[in-house]
Image (tube, rainbow over all chains, first blue to last red; front, top):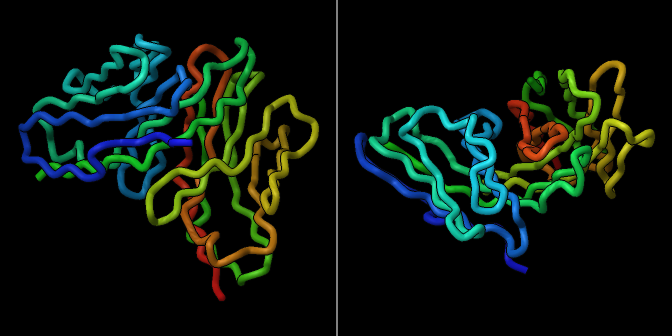
Length: 119
Length: 115
């Protein structure tokens, strides 16, 4: 079956521009996550969707970053007034919701990422 | 807050030999999950193995096993019979209970397998 897909695979933009990054999760996965991976680092959590709503956006670095998931499937990460420090690989992951409040086996399936370069 | 520490510099292993990649973690939660992911140069994150904090047996998945030592808060990945295709970045990660099972990742370890 199809995995998580992300478009575009690469995005080059100029400082100050607006960008949108798209994520198409695995069908049936209710949970969707965005992570940012800077060069030489592990992924860092940005935002988590449970269905259509953002259940946790505590990882968004500032109010230039916003994400939506209007129909509970595809999600778009939006970055306004891009800065050079926003350059990174943006990873999307999806999973089933935890089966209970004590369930920690949250295997997340990752997309190939979008490499964002801000000049 | 959760923290994952991976401090090994780049690791090298001879093909067909075993290698251990270190991971220590810190959390105040009683229930948590530990994961290892592989990231080849192509960039995708590939799930390898999972260990729950209450699991008494160490997890195994094919050539991968997780050496879980709860008292020492370590979750080392052991790869047996290394193959050239194992050359990649390896990330240790942790999840916790609750509605949001976001993963907290370490910085990763680069593994190079020599023929």
